[in-house]
Image (cartoon, rainbow, N blue to C red; front, side, top):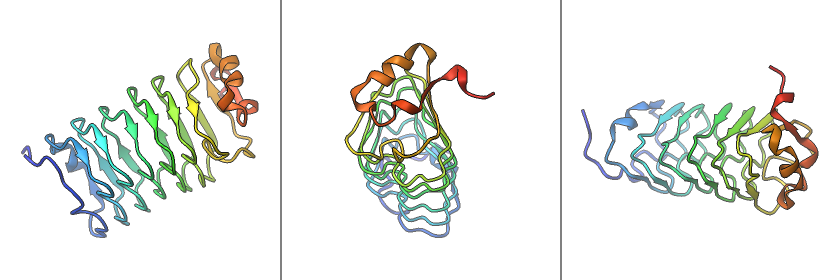
Length: 196
């Protein structure tokens, strides 16, 4: 059954009953998610977006403290502020076609997040995107051109962290030389150095 809704607004915000919303993939006429559409759904563990969704507003899944399984629409080119702030995501693989992650805690305070893989298409990552992600162990960038990082010291987690940031072998020097990567250049390694 295909639903004909174009927007789901905030009817699910704060809902503590739903634990999964894989059915969202059937809302094929929904093209955007409203601000805080699923925010504070404390028992929501899984959310799969249909690829008809092209935009998302502020904090769509903010403080969904049980949310582990997220499938983001492949039509999304920008992830907005606080979109997945304080969720329970452990492994994050961002899709090809994603261009920008906006400033202010897009994935901030995801204290169970272990690793992040970025697509080759990413060109910008905003301030404090991964601030408070204290369990991170690695990041992988697939692009040969380093994305521009916003100001501040917590874009890719704390600058005091020692976990590696893997990039294509041919791009190691480019990442280390990029001005916005000055706080992270000592952690940049070629992907061939990653233990298998």
